[in-house]
Each structure stands twice: as structure tokens, then as C-alpha cells.
Image 1: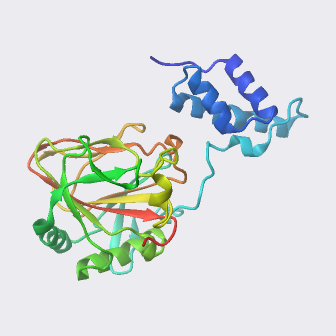
Image 2: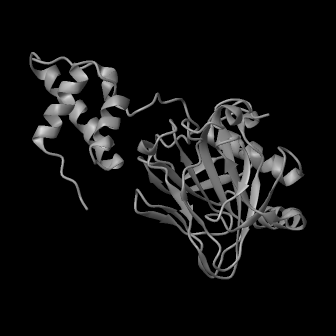
Image 3: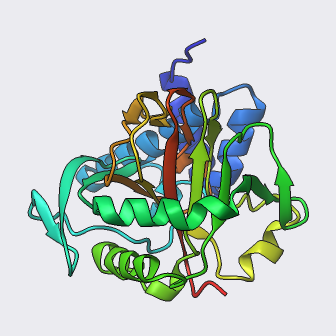
Length: 293
């Protein structure tokens, strides 16, 4: 059911901010009152930004701290590609990478020609003997667990484990301007027909008791790069439900997305759609705030 942001709600938001309540507190109050979180976040941001613009044009009656405009949580620097001049291609050092499509919110960039056919084949063949049922992070303890939402098989490379892995990692570091040592090792995944990974976030939920343990290894995840190593006949796209966007799995291509805070306001909910025909192989690279150990 859709929810309408009324003038009364906008007035209430301004009053709460002026009274000194943080965005987190205001958001929690709205959600507790029955507002859908994405609607509440959008209402907070748009209302307070408009109010600040009005303050700049006239003497305000109610003062709102500028920091109240920010989405819940404090944003951090994240990896990104230099697209300031709208390039068709980006020099990644040993390879020109195509820019196929971009979104600003969520921050998503679809890349072409990131990997050669030979590199795709090498990753698949190196990974194949080591595949096992994929696990997910168990955020209550910081360990790992089987998750019915993830029905692929996979394995992890350590950083620089093979010549292909080392070469691709250096390419990615240059491409997104992020230290090589801040990256987790590649995870290679294989999806059979019917296999999928239901929509989820890649950051670690701060509310979960196991998150502090996870963060000791390099801080939060701040970006993800999914590289397509082959092409299933049908299905298997990477979906972004909040943006109504789907990336088709094309061999050698990739999709990059970043998230500057561990919060749904980043709109980075994403999933691997079920493979309908054939199989899908991907390599995923997660980037952390600090050196991953």
C-alpha cells in the first residue's frame, strides 16, 4: 500500500529536528508509527533539505541543524570510478574498461570488458575443484552459516593466490581508486538452474551482536564488484529491487556498487535472480574500509 507524505508530516519532521532530535530518532519514530522505512527516509531528506533552502532565502522562524539532513548514520569515503567527464572507457592500467550504464542513487556502474575470456576461463577452472555449498555470514556470532536464500556453490581465493587473481585485483584497485589490501579475496560462485541469491545487503548490520567481531578484520564493507565469468542461456541477472534495475550476466562484464553507510537508505538491496536455463559463474569482490586481514 502506498503512503503519502502530507504537509502535516513535513511540519512534524521540521519540529522534531528543531527540537534537537537526531535523524535516527525521527526515523525510528516514523517506522514505529507505521511508515515504510524507504518512504520515511525519503521524507526526512526531502523535507529537511527544502527547509534549509527556504532558510537561506528568508529569515527562519525555526532553525534546523544542517547535520539533521543526512541520512541515518554517518557516511564514510567509498571506492568509486572517475566518471566526471562522462567517459565511454576508463584506463584500468592493463586494459580499457567500457562504461555501459550508471546510476547515482544507488551508486551503480555497469562495466564491460573488465575481464578477458581467458581470465574468465582461468578463474572457473581454478575454482571448480574447490566448490562447496555457499555460506553466508552469521551476524549473530560473526561466523558462517547455510542460508536457504543462497543456493549457489562457491569458494574463496586468497588475495593474489593465482597470477590471474593478482592481475585482476590490481586492475580493480586502479579502476575504483581503493587500496588493493582493503579487498577481500575473490569469491567464485556457480549457480545451477533454479539457484539464486535472494535480495540482501552486503554491509554488516550494526545491530547484530556478531558484527563487532566481523569488523575487526577490516571494518565495514563499502563496495561490491560482481564479475560475470560466463553467460547463462536465460535468467541469472543481478537485480536492484529498490531501483527497479537489473544487470544481465554477460561474460567479462561486471557491476560495481558502493554504500557509504550500513543502512537501507543506500538503496543497495540486490540479489541474484534464479537461473532459468544453463548455469551462471560469477566472481565477487568485496571492498572494506581498511586493510582486510
